[in-house]
Image 1 (tube, rainbow, N blue to C red):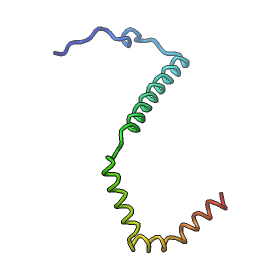
Image 2 (image 1 turned 180 degrees about the vertical axis):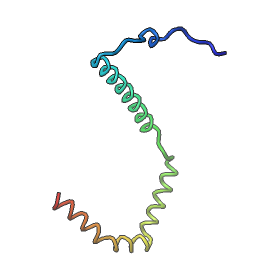
Image 3 (image 1 turned 90 degrees about the horizontal axis):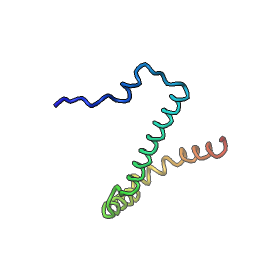
Image 4 (image 1 turned 30 degrees about the vertical axis):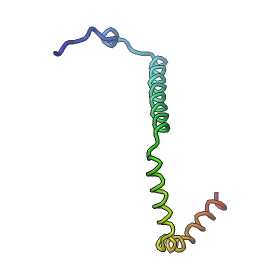
Length: 94
């Protein structure tokens, strides 16, 4: 059950130190491999929709109903001065 495979490349390289250039090249290859894997994950996530069209429509209706509520409108009116100050700060001080 617990069979050992033949010697690995690491066994053959025992006692061999990599030069700084070789170490940097190894690290670059590891990073390139990681980037390729992450790009594949991003592509996969972009291909598959998170919600079905029916679920999307239901959520859009819920948001529209929430935005038409009195609580939402009062909250927007109360927070308007804060939003205006934040906008002015970004616009004029940056």
